[in-house]
Image 1 (cartoon, rainbow, N blue to C red):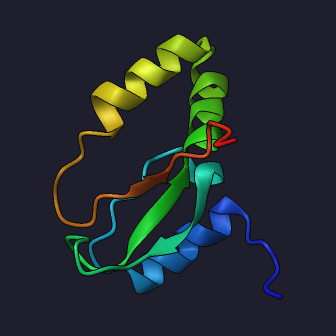
Image 2: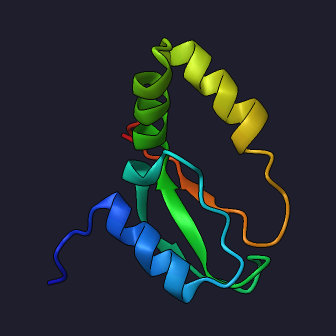
Length: 95
């Protein structure tokens, strides 16, 4: 089994491995890994946990959940160039 890696450690790995990865400043604690795939522009990219990202935005800016979600939708989700991160939607229970 592989041990979990802290977000700041993922940033260091991404800096080494990902030539074009877009990393979100101040939100390292929300990085949960790296992804690669045929449809990903720019090769290997960072993967962020949605719930950790929203929590980090709230803490850093003293926002409520709605404000953090709005910032995510308007400023982060729309990153559309090579190396843009992907977001794991871990904010709901599928059952």
